[in-house]
Length: 237
Image 1 (cartoon, rainbow, N blue to C red):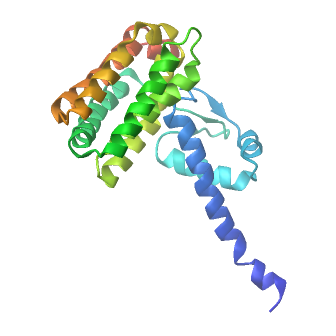
Image 2: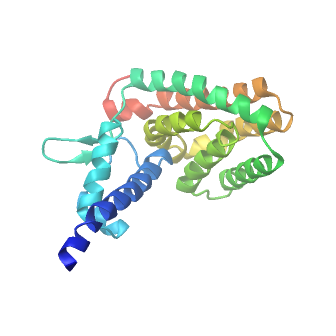
Image 3: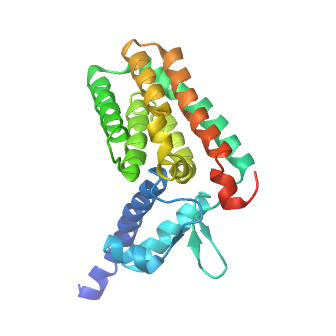
């Protein structure tokens, strides 16, 4: 057996493994709001940042483009899509419906360990939001962590996968809310709704938990629309 025949089996497996890793890393950037609509990505810069070759980055970007959460222009420029106001409203209503199911089930089924994790993430978000100089990027990340700590207790893996895909599209726009508008943190809307959700989950009140998360999603959406988050990007509502 020569080395060529042995090595021939390895690259495809390695590329596939790296591609999955890169896909997860880029997905996390999108879902956590660390990328905003209109932001551009470079294959080479992304590869250098992740310590991989360009190939797995290109494969991951192709998958994300197929998911509709990245765009690849004819000139090979990669960017986060700019969402229309109508598409954003449709996404909001879909999130309220789907995430409402998850949080209601989480309230009814959560374990003591899951409740403790939800409390920790809510406390971390609250501490960051109430800091004298909050780190807005970290606040966006913690907001995502709290939501997914809740949804992780719903007991339905396929439902969690659907929510994760929705957040790939929602994350960059949430960036326009918590990260681009610091007053949103100071006003404390998210803090109140998160606190209401945690109390409802503690009490195993699924309806109240779903209502709190629905209000959280809807109030953030109204803020983005009324404060020009999408208009600033598109020039129209």
